[in-house]
Image (tube, rainbow, N blue to C red):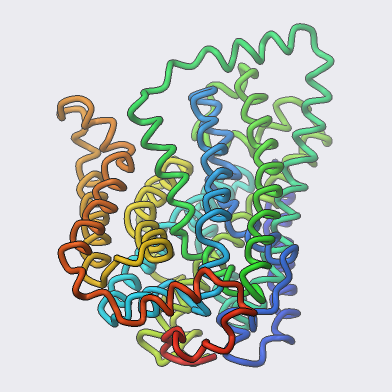
Length: 499
């Protein structure tokens, strides 16, 4: 792809994002608009927005690169990403919305009646948001250098600037419009090239046989890593702050369930296309030596269709890639700003904007001063961390009356500490006895049960600390809204401001 086509494509996506964000600003008048879009987002609209922010650089570029390297072993990533939403539908979506909270720390303080739990939860949310934003900025750096021939540092600056502008000016209301648009742009940008390339390649003799050989040529997956990866992806989805915050924008618990069901369908269909493109890449000898593997998708159409047609498809893929960086980053910044503004800046609109500025500045500095890692692998580490911290808090907080504030704090600290230890030991994993090297690489199999176990045991030991309001709170979480409105004041979520 030449400089002109790539540069114009990137600028067009950024301009469209800003224009749609400014349009959404017309509807952002209150504090509630900035935090939760005044809880008026319909299921279809919200599902599109969730798809926009959830399908990040790892989903868009990383899966194709993983399939190119690992073949069928990489298919656990799209399966895990998708199945995580089934867990959300079954266990979290409706109760979380019925809590009436505005952020995950709001829910934690509401459920456990503890300011300290809120602070610990806020720290976890901040770390997750920053850790998740950095790979998006690395992906932007990769895209501008590989597809447009621009210096890599332009990508993080451009994404941070656009995301910061849109979030600061319009908050959740503007981001909802932006993310819904970006989901359908990403969907089109993968679906059209995948279908066109499949039609072109299907006419070649023995192509189906080449496909089967390409997928079976990968080495067998390590069972420890595979099981650990599945646990991390399934449960990690339940703790993603930028996904969970969108359920607060639904009008009620029933619409939150419908939103999750629609997301499950949209995400399932979407993942067919990066999987298909990854299989296509693996069957092409020209793609085998490409490095980095995450950039292969950007060049794939030109390998199959040399000339203007391939260039046009590559341009479309680049547009979708930048939409992925922008939409995921914007959702994470909104989540970050909602938490930090309530805890540090009084929950005001000005505080939200200051927090959003902080939310983009730190990851941008980290991305500019560090090298890009494999996108899907780096996001997998974030999923393991969320599965070991916020996931136990939410599942036990929603479904177990016996959870205490001390139990939640010790459980989150245990999960976070063990994850940090695993990530620190990665460079020396080969020196550890089996199966520790595999668990260091994919730690969820060890860290998730440890976090759950710690939370349960410490809660049982401190069972005298169960809040007297627990029965009323649990009734609120599990009773349809119309049946408990009269009792709402007895179990009202705690927030630094009441938007």
